[in-house]
Image (cartoon, rainbow, N blue to C red; front, side):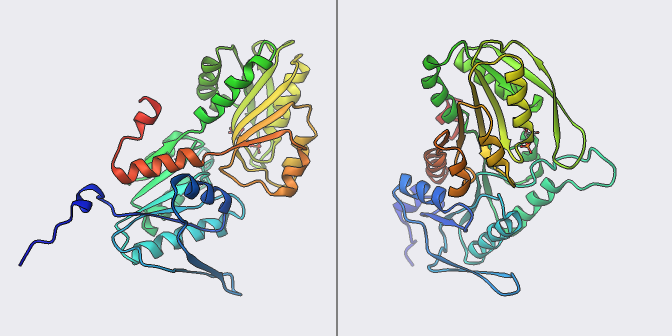
Amino acid sequence: MPVLHSARHDRMKYGDIKLYTGTSCPELATRIAAHMGLPLCERQIIQFPNENLFIQLQSSVRGQDCYAIQTTSAPVHRNLMELLILMQTLRLDSAARVTAVVPYLCYARSDKKDQPRIPITARLVADMIEVAGADRYLFLDLHAGQIQGFFSIPGDVLTAFYILIDYLKAKKPTMKNPVVVTADLGFAKKARNFAVSMDVPLAFIEKRRISNDSKAQALTMIGDVRDRDAVIVDDEIDTGGSMIQAVNLAKDNGARNVYVVFVHPVFSGNAAERLAALPVAEFITTDTVPIPPEKMAFFGGRLTQLSVAPLLGEVIQRANEGRSVGELFNE
Ligand code: R5P
């Protein structure tokens, strides 16, 4: 009996790339697909009257390299369940490999037991992603890098840093004596990378979170922002509380123009409206979380949303071909 052998399968270890998405980030998924010159695969997602979800693939993925693209912003639990069910569906249809592509990972702030009698929900989410059938993950700017340790599957944690920094470098000639300000000490190391790449000084805001009700308090500005353009950086804006205090503190300390730079525009509740009322020259963020048009409208053109789709598309391509992702970033 002849041994079946195909040169194509030597090259394509994991089969063809199949891009699937839930309902959380259709624009981003479409941009990734367009960047890669691939279609988004058809699937049906139904929510029954009892809120249970049903997913059916419209074609077979047997032996294929499947990517489930789903951000886990609001509605968090619906989006998370869609991701999990989509991956189980791919697994049960005998996909060769399933990768969870999650531009914004929910519960990432619940990453330690720093009070008595509380959960570590980020760990629970990691377990659920694995149990649902992920062989790999692809995340962007995790709130805490250590969350990778909650997974026993391999994956890539990417950063939008290069996308944001390219934009800021192009903008720098229009700024007066810019200084990078970190809104959160937990982001200080990344903020330093911004400052080094822009070749400008760095200032810090010392902030203490004093309760569980999402209210943060900015306390002190460490560094000089007087008569300088302040570029305030953070990983995400959720309720906007931290950033509003940071902008006000920068202004109180004599900052000239303020630019607000962050990766994940979570914008819970009325955050967009409250942020848009601030004396900020420009908000610069990414599309890891979609911003509804009604929230976008508050900013009247002062919010720039840079796409992470080319980055995710390139990394998916490399993962499929078994090529280094690090060399994309000269690592
Ligand atoms: C804090 O640890 C983070 O870096 C952000 O500052 C925080 O997630 C922002 O949350 P909010 O917008 O609700 O103040």
